[in-house]
Each structure stands twice: as structure tokens, then as C-alpha cells.
Image 1: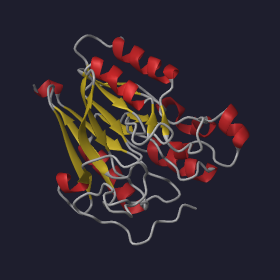
Image 2: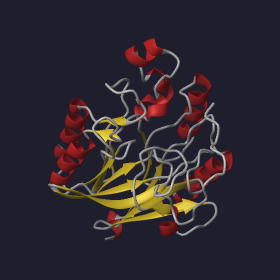
Image 3: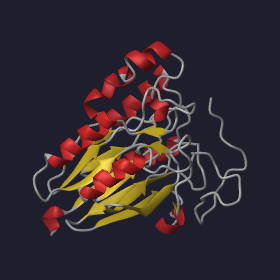
Length: 286
């Protein structure tokens, strides 16, 4: 039905501080031209959560002419001020506070946030995801309160998969979260973090869940050029197109599996998209 049609732009990992300005100018123009019903940004707005990076991110995001929901990524929590990280970790989002973890009602479709970036966790690598019971409870409560028949896209930063062992899981409690979302028949889980796009079906004990990842709009590319997902919903089917400045076909921009980190592939067997634009040298992080 025409009245059910919705267009969503799914952006992620902009990383102001190492942003790709050509890509950002292009995306902003696409938003102006296509007037999407919503823009979902799934975290990592900044490189190191510096004040100047947040200032640039805030200015750009607030200039977008569309309803926006913004997720928190691991790079968006203060790196160098531990007191602020633990006491007021989201203080630097104040210029776009109303957009952070915002639920968007698009009629027959809704975007509901689920936070996976936490200020601390009982393992050395705090860059990985963690779904706390409180965060999951809040997400499920929002889903359960929606009008009957509403389809749901859940927006997270880290893919909800426990790749690796108990101590190195990509997203701790991700499997449990996926099972709960499968019970509710969510349309898809939108994520970022790995800097390559993907569109895979993850099986759980409660059924399959579609996981859709967006690439990066920064210079920290992995195996594909900067990109974003243009998502179309016609009332029954969700279509994902990976948009990029090089006009590479969607399937060639997508990886078949979820890697454990967001660094370019360096070893045999690591997930890599068919386009295989792996940088010879890893981009700087400072």
C-alpha cells in the first residue's frame, strides 16, 4: 500500500575527527533531495569523544532536515576523563539531547533503541558491546507498548552476536537479547561498529532475526568505501540498498559474516566484502 511506504536512511560510524567530508556532504544532499521519513544513526559519532568532535557532530546532525534518532557508540563515551565517563557519560550529547536514543513512530513502523555501549564492564576490552538487563527491559517495554500490528526496527551500535568465547564475546548478552526480540517478531536489528555493511539472518531458539549493519562514513574503512543504508518499507517488506559514492552494487558492499572488531582484515578467513577495498595501511586513530 502506498500509504505504508517509508524511507529510512541508516548511518553509522561517522567518527568526527576522522570523518569523510566528501561522503558527509553527499549524504546531507541525499537527505535534502529524498526527504527520508527518518534517519537512524547507530553510534560512533566521534573518534575519541573530544569536545571539538562532538561540536562538529552536533552541528552536522542538527542541520539534517529529517527526524533523527542517535545511538551511543563505544567511541562516544569519554576516553580521557574517567570521572565524566562514570558520572555523566552522556554530557557531551547535550547539544542534540532530544535525539539520543529517541523512539521514532513512523505509523505502521517504529524505530526503538537498545543501548549496547556501556561506561564499564568486567573485561579488559570496553569497546565491545554489553546488553544490560535494564537496557533490554526498557527496549522490550517500548516494543510491547506499541499498537498491535506495528512492525519494529531495533537500533543498536554493536551487532547482537556473541562472537568468540565467554570473555571475548562481541556483545555480551547479545544472544539473549536476540531471542527476546525474536519472540516479538521484530522486522530487523540495525547496527554499526564493524564499518562494513551486512544483511544476514541470525537464527535463535525463538526464531530468526534479520541483522542489518551499516558501513562507515569516515576514513576508517575496512573492506568497502564509505557508505550508508537506504531502507525502504512498503508495509510488508524491508528492502536494503547500500549507497556509496562509487556506485558499487549492494551485494558487493556487504560482508557475509560479522567480524569481531572494526579493523581492516589482515588474516585469512576474516570477513571481507567482494569489493575487497582493504586499505594497505590502517588509518590513524589519533
